[in-house]
Amino acid sequence: MTDLLLNRTRRKATPIHMVSEDAVNGLLRSLPKPQSAWIKAHGFSGKAGTHVAVPGEKGEIALVVFGTGAPSRQADPFLPSKLASALPDGTYAFHEPVDQGTLVALGWLMEAYRFDAYNAASAPRAQLVAPKGVDADAVRAKAEAVTLTRDLINTPANDMGPDALEKAIRALAKTHGAKVSSIVGSQLLKQNFPMIHAVGRASDIEPRLVDMTWGAASRPKVTLVGKGVCFDTGGLNLKPGNSMALMKKDMGGAANVLGLAAMIMQAKLPVRLRVLIPAVENSVSAGAFRPGDILPSRKGLSVEIGNTDAEGRLVLADALHLADEESPDLLIDMATLTGAARVAVGPDLAPFYTDDEDLAGAISQAGASTNDPVWRMPFWSPYDEWLSSSVADVNHISSGGFAGSITAGLFLRRFVENARSYVHLDIFGWTPKSKPGRPMGGEACAIRALFEVIEKRYSSRRTRRR
Image 1 (cartoon, one colour):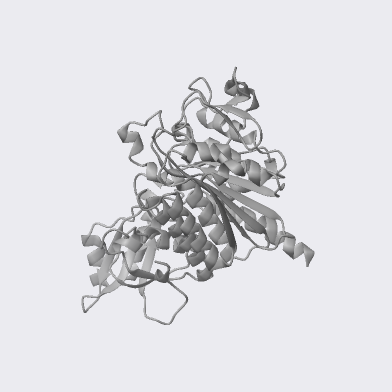
Image 2 (tube, rainbow, N blue to C red):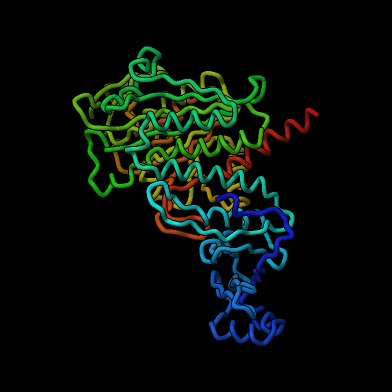
């Protein structure tokens, strides 16, 4: 897919003219009469997202006209990416300078993505010459990270269990020279990860905690924790069939932190990166954990189980406390954690929680500049009491139906004390309806925004030290 973005080349490319609704007549006057007539005959008005392929004298595509809509309306930078899947094979280049050329080029590659591991569906092969001023290598690296994330989420659970997820992590580590270790099965109990073990023990595939490290130990510690529930039945609080259908994506947090890690390592950012993935299946068997159970945790808190379908926060809690033990400079967790987050902000926005005001501002700004939308949510401490338990230190869910995403975040925050900055993201990991640059299916959520934050935060430190 990434070979669809070409460096500046002398290869003949079909020009793409981007035109707003109020500029159509001017374009028509500038073109030869046969081409103008062709565009008029197709009723092209410059409406956003529409296009016309205009033939030349020999029947070839001589130029493409793409509508950007009303000039007063702020267009999605990924809008022109629709051409990547609409145009036939060939090489294309934008005729005029392109605003936000980097995002336009990235959107082209993201639109061209196809998950074809199980069928022979042909992917689009329309190649784009990188717009002037665009770092094509950097764009391709981001697109490769998005592809990794999407492929992991889209792979069905019969081929993406905890063992297969570990193999994917090891493959990524090998590519970038990272180190990987794992704690599997009963070793989780011996090494004090009781909640990871409890959630995954009912599956035929043993639960595990996978630990990947990269970069010099002397550098600032950036730690990523991703929920790796490879399939979620809901456990004994069994999900109904329509809610279980997409649960192959419940390891979307793991997939997203791996995509983010790939970008960090590919860019060789001056950080010591650690990635922790608790990889489990929440299955049903005689060994499944139960509602009403009281589980120990790595931190030492006893946790009452209010509902076995809220398993993700349990495995994250043990992993987060491990991460927190070495006081990282930045600790990020990502998880497909609650339906409440979808009710609050829908599928497109990635809600995030942090007490670090500077970090919150940087993430919000990066989300806007990278076209990777995020929305800050509050760690509202008064709701902490909703997690109270009469028989344990804490219940892992609240007793009422309010603020489910907030209370989940508050539960996780209890397991982080030493990290200099901490942010929790409750993502969806899925695009339910195709949009420009975002085909339906598994999705990378907020990782491009987070990469920009990390790159600016730590590359600037390296510059100052020089």
